[in-house]
Image (cartoon, rainbow, N blue to C red):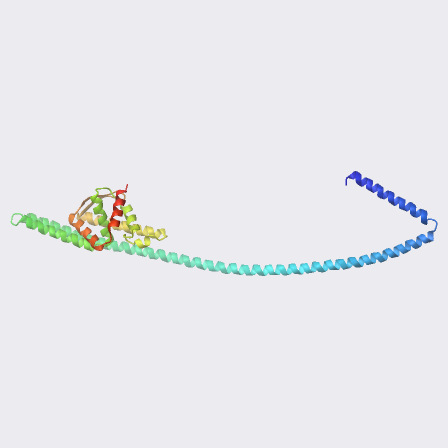
Length: 307
C-alpha cells in the first residue's frame, strides 16, 4: 500500500466515524437518560471484559514465565553438563600430555643410549683396526728385515753356494709369509683382495666406493646386516668401517710390496699383484664358497659398468 492509498483509507475511516456520530446523535439525542444508562452499562460491560482479558493475559504471562524458567533451568543444566565435559576433557588432555612427555623422554633416552652404543662400537672397531694394523706393521717390518737379510745372504753366498737353491729358499720364505698373511685376514679383507685381483685381470680403473656399496647390498661386506636400517648414522658408520678396512689393506700390502695400488677410493689402479698372493686369495675364496658364479658375474658387471 502506497502513501496515496493510505491517505484515502484514512479519509474513509474518518468519514465512517463522522457518520456514526451523526447517527448516534440523531437516534439518542432526544432521550439523554437512556444514553447515560447505555453508556454506564457499556462501561460496566467493558470493565468486565477488560477484567476477564486481564485475567487471561495474566495467565498467559504466567505460562510464558514458567516456560522461560523451564528453559533457563534446562540451559543451566546444559551449561553444567558442558562444564563437566570440559573438565573431563581437560583432565584427559593433561593426562595424555604427561604420557606424551614421558614417552618423548624415554625415546630421547633410548636414542642417546643408541648413539652412545654406536660411538663405543666405532671406537672399539677403530681401536681393533689400529691394533691389527700395528701387529701387521710389526710383522711386515720383520718380513722386510728377513727379506733384506736373505738378499744379503744371497749376495754373500753367490760365490760358494748354488744360487738357484738360495733363491728357492728366499722364495719359500716369502711364500710362507703370504700364506700366513692370507690366513690371518678376515673374509671381508679377502673379498677386497679378490676385487683387486679381478680388477687387475680386466686392466681397468676401479671405484672402491662403488665396490663397497655393491658388497653391502650383496651382504658380503663387513656389518652388511645393519647397513639397510633406516638410521642414516648407522649406514654412515658401516660405510666408514669398510672404507677403513680398505685403507688398512692398502697400507699393509703396498708397504710389504706384495700388491701395488695407485689412486684413491674413486679411482683405483692395480699396478701389480704377487702371484702367490693371488693364488692364496683365490684358494681361500673357493674354500669359503662366499662368492659363487652368480655373485662373480654380478661383480664383473659392476666393474665393467664403472665410469
